[in-house]
Structures are given as C-alpha cells and as structure tokens.
Length: 377
Image 1 (cartoon, helix red, strand yellow):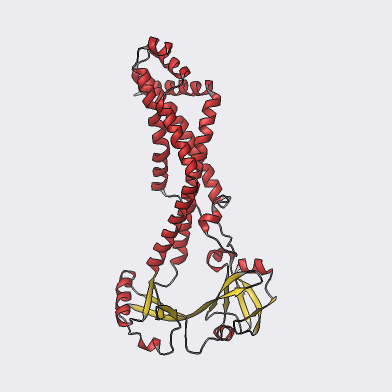
Image 2 (cartoon, rainbow, N blue to C red):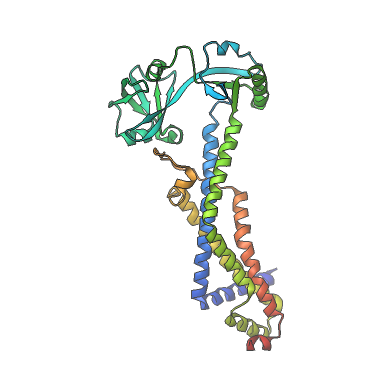
C-alpha cells in the first residue's frame, strides 16, 4: 500500500511539473474551465436557495385558501357564504381575510393592502421596507393616496415592517379593517377569501376535496400547489438563464472535444520519450488521469467557491434580476447558504468526469503506439 501511494505521489509531482512547463496553455484551460463551472454553479445555487427560501416563507401560509367564483372569476365572499360552508371534520379554523392591490402612480408600483386584527390604530398603517425606501417615508410621516372612488385618504406611518421579512413584506401595507373597507369602499360583511387551517397535514387534500364537492362555486388553493408553482417558476427561469448561457456550455463541450480529438505534438513527443525510457502504458495513463483530475478538480473547486461567494455574499448580482423576477419594488434580502449535496455531485459529474475521461482517450492511443513512431510524428 505504501509503495502504491508513493508511486501516485511521484506521478502527481511529475504531472504538476508538466503542467508548469505548459504554463500558458494550462492557465488558459483552467480559467475557461473555472468560468464555465462558475456560471453553472451560480445559477444552480441561486435557484436552489430561492426555492428553499420560498418554501420556508410559505410554510407559515394557510394550508387551504377558499375563493368564491362568479362566472369563473374571483369574486368577493358573500356575507352568508361562511354559513354555507359545512363544518368539515379536520378543519381547525376558518379565517375570512381582507386584502387587495392598489397602484401608486408616484412610484408606478402596486402595493398589497391587508387588514389584520393586530393592525395599528385607525388612521395609522404599517408599511414594507421597499415601499418606505421608494416613497422616502419614515415612522411618523403622513402619506396620502387617492382611492379608486376619487377620495383622498391620509394615513400616518406607524412603523416599518421588519427587514427580515422583506421577501414577503416589501410592498405590504397593513391597516385596520375599518380603514381597509373605507379606502376600497368594501361592502360590510364581505371578504376577499377564507384561510382554512387543517389539524392533520396529511388530511389537507381530503378536506379540500370535500369542500369542493359541497361548494361547486368555490376555488380551493392548497399550499402544496403554491409550492409546486414556485418550484416550476424557478426551474423555468433557471432554464432561461442556462439557454442564454448555452454559448458557455458549447465552449466547454468544444474544449472537451478538443482534448479527446488528439494531443499536441509536444505532448505526443513527451509520451514517446516516457515510453522509450521504460514507462509502462498504465503509468502514462495514470499520469494523464492525474493531469485531467488535477486541472478539472481545481477548476471545479475554484468555480464553485466563486459561485458561492457570488450568490451568498454578493447576492447573485449577475443573475438576480432574471432569477428573482421583475418588479418595481425589489425586496432586499440575504439568501441563507443552501447547498444540496446531490446538486454538487451532479455538477461535478457533468464537469469533472467528462474532461478527465476526454484526456485519457488520445493519451491511450499515443501510449499504445510504438515510441519511435510517436516521437517522429
């Protein structure tokens, strides 16, 4: 075992020296390889982190949301609708909600208004951090909007929501029920939708099925369906970025093909000399294996570390607008480091393994040829 380890150490030392003799070529390959891994890893890390962050945020959302439909469109919940909802076994709580959208022409963005039980006093509101930045307001300032009926409503900013929740609260406005109904001219006793809490998470779909059968004019939105929608959306955006960056992937494919298609004259001559002085074919192949593994492994680690810094410390500046989405009020939030071991393994297999194998193919051809013919070619 010790003899085998010493032999591998000597092969690695020789390989490093050989790469040093071809410093310009090796450095060019390393930089190109690193750039390709960096691009792929950045997109994969950013998408995975967004998917995990969305799952964490939605974990506190209602298991089921019930909406009333009229002519296939979302309509207000009538005053007697709550009485029509049958008491289902497994339903822990049903909470009617009031929320809506308002377009602010000052910043040309939509706000989400929501009435809550723990809202500030009448005439006061809590606003999201992104909205506060866009309007340049602080706690205690007055803010006025012209409602859809033309009336002007003035509110006092009671506070700004916590920046840690900015992913969901960037454009949020929290106010009391009376202020909400007055601003939107909302009819008394009617609501936007109903949030349903289920005791047993495994019974969510069964409860939704029973409610759907009892209320044909209702639409039921499950939290699991929302999570799947977000996952599909992030996967779609990831595909768009990878399609745009397909040139980088093509360059990597051409790089691997170039290595597989043949060796440079200097490399062929080196292999011929090694064979002439007594190296076996297996030793030459192991040496080339270490050359490919060292180059590709170094490029993979460098590219992945740079991608990690880019995504989790520089906030994915290169791909953030595309992967995060388009909006006027962009939330500011830091993605917690999320690393999927299967994702890392997949990326390594797609980048390290093909290049390492591609290096061995032409080397095997040269190593199995007569050394004299190789040196003269």
